Length: 198
Image 1 (tube, helix red, strand yellow):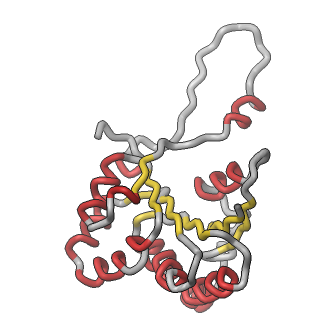
Image 2: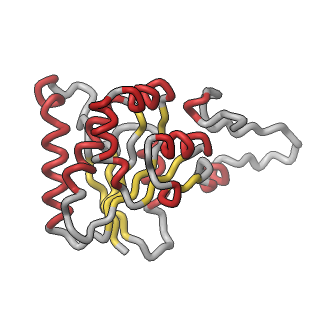
C-alpha cells in the first residue's frame, strides 16, 4: 500500500512530525509519501502564509489525482487554523475517485468543538470535510462521543491510545547498575492532551 501523508515540514518539531517519522520506520509493507502543508518556515511572509491553505489544497489534490497513492492520510487538530486549512484539503480531495481519506486528530480543543456544534458555517464546513473521511482516529473516547454528536457515523471513528517510539527510550537507556526511578512524561496534563478519566 502507498499512502500520501500530510504534515508540516520536517524542520518543524512537534507531535505530528515525530509521529510521521515513526510511521516511516521499517520494516513494513506500506510506503508513506510525505506532502508538506502549512508554513514552510517560521519567518514566512504574511501574504504567502495567507495564500498557503488554498495553494496547499490545489497542490495536494493535483498530486493525489495523478499519483498511484492508495489513500490520503491527514493529521489535523480540532482547532480553527487546522480546521480551515486541513478541512479545505479534505473537501477538495473528496471528489477524487478511489482515493479514500483517513484522518488522525492529534489535538483537540473542547471550546472549538462546541463552536462547531453551535455555528452553522462551521457545522457545514465540518460536514463537508472531515465528516466525509472513510476513517477517523481519535486519542480519547470522549472525542469519539463529540464526533458522534456532530453526526459522524460511530463505525467510522476509531479510538487509539497515544503512541511513542520505544527506540528513543532504548537509545537513552542508562547502563548504570544502580536502581533509579525513571519517569516517561508524554505530554502536558490537560484535557486537550487526553489526560481525562472519561
